[in-house]
Image 1: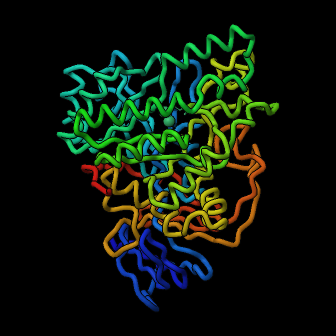
Image 2 (image 1 turned 180 degrees about the vertical axis):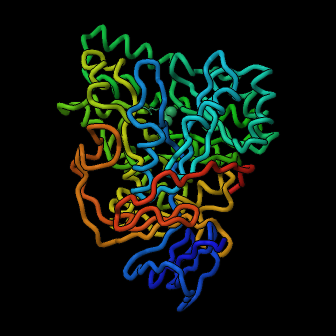
Length: 457
Ligand code: URP
Ligand code: ZN
Ligand code: ZN
């Protein structure tokens, strides 16, 4: 049978290192040719006049179908992956999460089951909830099955590991060319702070950021940096939210350590005054929203190439689920929805406002993740690469509301944000899945078995 062929004409191809006006020929699931006036009889033609053609976005951080103990996320792989694709995200890296008394293999099998039928491509980071000899031995099996990155939490009763376990895991991961991302917050101190606030009668959502001030993250980032130094291993910080945390990571770089950093749109665009809003529970996530100065320092870090990826930490709950903690901020299910809006937010408030270039947007939304997480076939528009492609219409204008999105929840932390640009057309594995901003083919995603991480700094 002949491969399906598509030509994308008249657009500007944007990669992390430059842009060029050229046409693209897609043959099957590959980019077959880049050139001028490409023509093939029988090929579907997409006219990209006035549009940017970018490598499909990769979201480094999603939680679909996650049971946090108090609530199950509103989005599963079906709804979450559709929202992702509509926003130009062609691949997500979701957190397969080990049960305390379970194996990594059981978690991986479970996440493969959950992800069946996904509308975007997907890979898994493995969240390690228990570290022992057996789990250490499983890392080799994980690598063979394409899982080459991990997350360990310094927080949450069901997930927290200790510093010695992080040290041992870093050493083991290094043997396998795998990266460990750490959720950096000081759990013991923040628990004390929660107790202090409650003793003062603070139970409303504004207690959440008070219990986890920026030093709670900065101390933990510093500790992680030193543990990674002792283990002689690369360090990856997930969802970095503070200027002080960034400074700690940069101190480690200055002494020669290999450090990678992920932040999220919420830490670039939202501030902690939102916890006093009537729907303050909506913004309860960890780390919490910060100050304007933190936002600006993180933008500056992006401009100067000091961060490596922007993921969403998509972890959606309905307002009814959030209400579990209406009278106790420490009981609000943590997280917010965002997988659909990352491209629009970074384009509008990053590129259009001159904080970063379009090429940097590609680097932070796609290329960096492809290299850090062993997906060399992705993250670039180049001959022979996977045909995961976004045709970005820069002229679109809209406003995000609590309900005009494809997330399976009745809220958005970005409600009220005006946005420019949208994913007009999206191709996944060479299949034209989004046309004129509408999903026309669901379920085209595949598992991406990943290789060793690549040193990118
Ligand atoms: O509040 C958040 N971020 N929930 C998701 C879990 C995590 O820590 O990433
Ligand atoms: Zn986390
Ligand atoms: Zn997360």
